[in-house]
Image 1: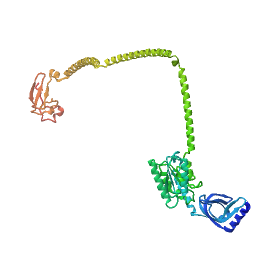
Image 2: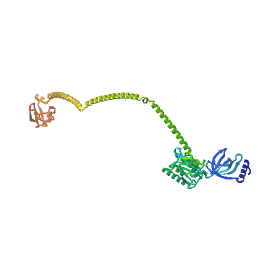
Image 3: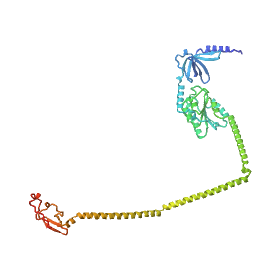
Image 4: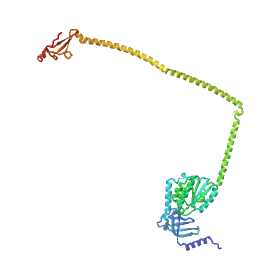
Length: 460
């Protein structure tokens, strides 16, 4: 067999490219896009391979720069650089596939979930380091199932593993993944499962799109036990990875990154045993030190002296207690005596006696005041009677005067009030007489006005 130099191999590659691939159209997902001096540098990736690419600014012709993750179709020429041993496509046109709709939907859903706080690390649960029962959701017979089974056999050999078959791409994938997660949640609620592994192998963005759907994300969030995802290769990131409690770059890593290995458990057991021995040794040392100090205590070295010392202290405290009790009894007796005197002074009999003395004194004072007021009133009445008697009609009658009373029983003061024939009564100092008016005599100033009236004569 002939041996070729590196240069010869490179030349053969160039000849083959010129002969077979004058112009070519390549479909792939943009990766590591960057712009240098207005030239675009990027890679095109599918599920199996990756191809570097360049697009000069003269060939862009108004094409919008792509974002990482956007699937595009690049048309151009394949070139090979012999010195670097690198093959790339020089793009002359670039057309997005679906105009990046998938990537835009994924970013919008990611932003919505983040705004709702569902991507917060504080919300996520910690899977058990030593699971008792594991549910694996993946496609039956896939490479991911084999990788996870092998990893769990070495990482968690004592765990019970249950495989749930579900499509991981295509039209039925979303519904079957949601049903599988709901079944796993029910098993977790019953205590039949500790953790869920949601895994699948690599693929294109379209192949992995089922793990970017809202329904699958909601099913992961509603699961009653922690969910660990391992979807695609290391460069693949999905919405399921974002909302899961833990995520790993590959299916096998999902089965190994979050569970304790036998070596780790052995190291932890050795560490705990060492800490236990050290703690027991330190405890024994402390007890020995305490026992040594206790053995040197005077009470243990000379117990009789210690007893006598305690006995004297007990006697002193007993005497002090007796003295305190006597003082307390004396204080209480004094308080009781003062209380008895206070009660006796407040007894109803004592209060009634004091009130009776006050009432008697008030009665005597009232009697004296009444007698004094009565005498003063009698003296005043006598004086007033004397004054009244001195000006009364009886005194006037006693001097020889009389009082004439008209028919109406009222004293007559004016003769003009009488008429001839009126009955009169004259009252003297002793007795009275009755008479009748014969004539009325008026004063000279009224004579002309009363010619028909007779004079009033007083029989006395």
